[in-house]
Image (cartoon, rainbow, N blue to C red; front, side):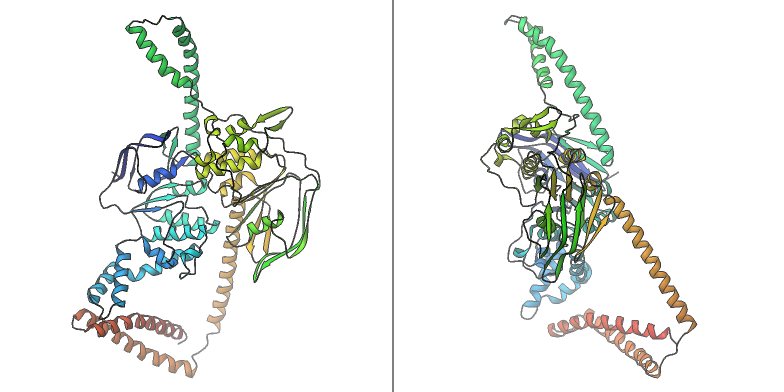
Length: 621
């Protein structure tokens, strides 16, 4: 029977008139890995903040198992500016972190009070390995300057430091808010492996559907202020969610039919009613609530007719770009075809966003030319492009761009209908921009780009901060889009759905064109790595066979070194045994204790080094 870790009952949270969720009840048990899905603005981040104790709630109860160790990765983590990267990883930690801090304080204090007890505890807690593990995780997340001040980090680097901090604390229960944001593809796949191999229980918000599938086995969805659970992967969730929506639509349709009959009765009946009539009147008002529900299942495809695009699209000729020793482009040439859908992938720092800015004319190439066709109308969704007048209403922001968008064949959508398709209800459209969540603002920004009816879309990390439901709408839009598309994204599922081929940025100006989607590229890459390993193994086998056939003898100098190593290793091991015995005796002064504690790790390294060399020479005996 799984051990219950968390039980939430009747949780309600509102901001003024806005009720985010009402009477939510759910639990998390040991070993459960749950992905949390909801439309932006439904309260996903607020719920995680409430569960972590960072935010209050109106009513309900939250009960954790006693002594449960909980780790929380926030969407926008904050640290004191004066800390270094390594100090930030120790900032919010476990009992081991406190122990290391005590040890460091002791070593800085005259006379090192309590050092003997601290050394014993350090050994028992295996605290010596802690810093090494932190550096290992930071290295996997491409953070290698451990002494860099936190204040100099980008938002993405800060998120990765916070992720390392949470992982190294080894909690029993992990709460993650968009852990894959600001991670490149290699880091995302490393994190997948890390979470799959661990015994963590977790509750996670993510828009990365492959990550969701590979890490989580259950999905919770917040929809219409309630929570629904699905015991299965993302594909199972889609299937069961659709069944739920279909059932709700049937219920609304049935209620509408009955409502018309009851409304007629209400109009006919006199004001003075008997008990039965009053009961029927109360039932009428309950029925009215169901019948008047607005429920858009988006069965209509948004088949927008992009503005005309000619045969000459876009030509990049012999482009060069570098920053010092870092090469972004080196003699890059490319001719875009009509209706081409290209994805751009590569690790952070390889120049993907710089490349886009050069194409858009926001940065200049060092050399080379760009020739754009006369009919091309760009729509550019950038990472920095989110700028609104916060005092405007949502509908006014879009109507300032266009009142209608053409669908072709005489069909058109108004700005309000277009916003509804991108999940802004009529009520939300008349909200002020400042009332929107971060994800809702991103969705509005996307609408402003698409409302201009471009024929060449360039989307730089469009999936960051967009919820899964919005991504489904955007995928459908792009699949039907009659124009050119360039997408820079770390979202593998999104890339598979949208693009025809990839430009792979390998760094230092090495850019390769791959004819397929991300999954096909990854499969090809794995096969190539395997083939390279087999070729390397074949070379090694050949070398070993040559060495076996032509085994050389030890030189005179090597024989002498071999004999000296045997004596030296014996002495080192004797010294190590003496120090270990002295440290356990309890008879050493503080000065002697400090000196011997420093000598012990040096001895271990020397013994390992000399033993390895002795083994090398012994193979030639």
